Length: 365
Image: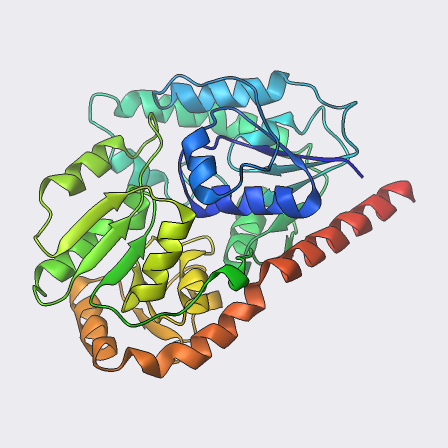
C-alpha cells in the first residue's frame, strides 16, 4: 500500500516533525508539506525520507497559516497513493480530495480553542484585531475540512478529550514513539537539560527564572523556532536577559542531542497542558529523571516519584524538585528506562499499521 503523509511544514526541529518523519520511514510513506528546512531534516537524521514540497510560505503570521491552508486545499495527489494521513493544524485542508484517510491529530488548533486567550494576549496590540478576524474566519473553514476526515487517531488521552470537546468526534489513541535503541546513559553530569521549540506555550521563562535563583545549578536549553510563526517575539524576549548559568544553544543535530541526554543530570519541561510531550520519554530512555508540570500529556508518561517529579507551574516548586533530584538522580534510572520501552518506535509502527489496515477493511466492507 502506497501512503502519503500531509504535514504543515518542516521548519524547525521538534517532536511533531520527528514523529511525522519516523512514521513516514516506518510505513515507507512520502511526506507532502510546504516549507522544508533541509538542515533540520539532516540534523534529525531523516535524509532518507522522501519529502515533497508544495512551495514556500510567506514568513509572516497569520499569512503563513492562511497560505498553507490554501496550498493543501488546492493540491491533488488523489491518484498517486492508496491511503492518506494528515498531521498538524493545516494539512487536513487536503482531506476533501484525498480519501481513504485518517488524521493523526496532535491537537485541535490551540489558538482557535483552549489557548485562544494565551496566544491573543501575546500578540502586539496593533495586530491583535487582525488576529481576531483571522481566527473568526479561519476556524469554521478548518472545521469544515475536518469534516472530510474519515478516521481520527490521536497521540494521548489528553488530546482525545479535546477532540471530543471541540469536534464532537471519537478517536483512537496511539501513543507517539521514540527510537529507544538510539538513547543511551553515560553519566549524571553537572547540567539540567530543556528541549523545546522557543514557543510561548512552552513557558521557558519559568525554567529560566527558577535557575536564576539557583546559581549553583546549570540549565542548557536546546531549541529554535520557525521563521514567521508566533514565537519570534517571545524567543527574542527570553534571549535578552539570560542568567550566567543558563545557556541557550539553539538547534543541534540528533546525535548532539542524544549526547546531551546521555550526560545531563536531569530533564525539565514546562509546557502548558502539553499534548503528549516526547522529550520526557527521550530523557527516560537515557536513564534521566524529568521535572514536568502537573498537567497535560505529562500525566500519561511520567510516573511521579519514580521516573521524575511532577510540579505546579511555579518557580518555587521547580527549584525544590531540582534540589531534591540533584541529591540522588540515580534513584530514578531503572524505572525511567523501563517506562521508556512502552513507547518504542517498533510498537508505534505496529499499532499504526494495524489501525490503518482496520480502516481499509472497513472501507472495503
